[in-house]
Image (cartoon, rainbow, N blue to C red):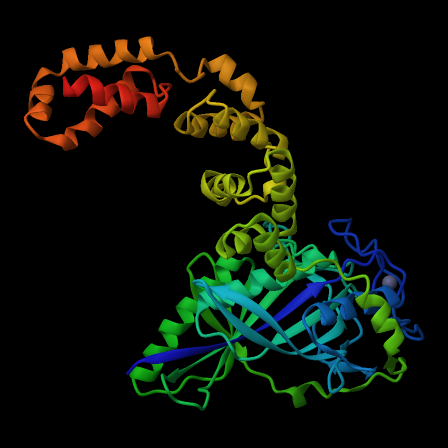
Length: 479
Ligand SMILES: [Zn+2]
């Protein structure tokens, strides 16, 4: 039987406010444990929460950017559970009345656009962090850091609309891009400012009803999410094919082994005993405020992509990749401003450049090649100072050392040979060294032409102008 995965994602994103959601403590990351706390975020008796207006504004921004309906009336509720990183014994969250509902995000997978529904976006507070002792003396202890307690979060719940790990990855990348374009979340998965849980079930292809799902946690990168889903697809198919039933449960991804392991039976909503938080009044959002916020929205990934296609006349495929992150889009536009041949710039960024960045896992603005350097190199190719082939070496050197292309070319002596005499000399040497191939070529084995081109390029250390080599070689070999 052929099975189809049904995937829905729940993303928690930390909002980039300076203070926490219900108190004035700083949200800074990486400070000394328990230095950013107060009676409110540590749940001291008698303390009262006060809602951070900026956090609401950010959440509304996200709602608008994902075409959600902004609810005029929403309610903060208490989600009750015990855990040592939760000093109050409950988390303040939204339950029955979330802030934003019924939105969507368009993703592009394998060139096809697909709409992923958003069921809801709600606000809540983050919990603290447990740190387990790592030395022999501390191994028996766990430590708790409340600095993160009360950092504002939005939870974005998608519909069960994704049908492959790749679609899930594309959805996450697009959602993160939107958050980053809005400048309301760093999107840093390693630091935990963008976290994802995945619900996944399998069903026979063609069947309407969903199968029993499991929830996957503990995935700290896009790669992990895709890997965990791939593993879970295989595991669930195995369970179903052996005639057993998938158990509804929460499973943890083990990155070291690339597997998921059972963590606990799935809790139901009623286990949390939700009720409206009596310390907080319902959140009423004026339509005029929503409109005011709407006017501050920046150009978003999809709009930018459309504009790139229009303005720069580049293929949609290029535009999709170039607008995948805001820094990449800015980089591209700056480069095109300095070297106004949009397709040439796009080709360079999407070729060797992206490969290097992917390998080093860094963003384009974290590498030493500036748009100025890239433009300067493209100008040198255009002027014929360097060949396209040499440009690849120049680029590698730029990427490694951060040097200016002109300086690199001068230092390495990589200037392109346009002197026909010099190229003819090289051709002569190649012909003399390969009499057998010459005879075969003249005897009709024409595909040997490539061999001669290669040899001439070797002779000139890749610096000969390829067009001239072709022309001169054609003449010489015919004789
Ligand atoms: Zn506090």
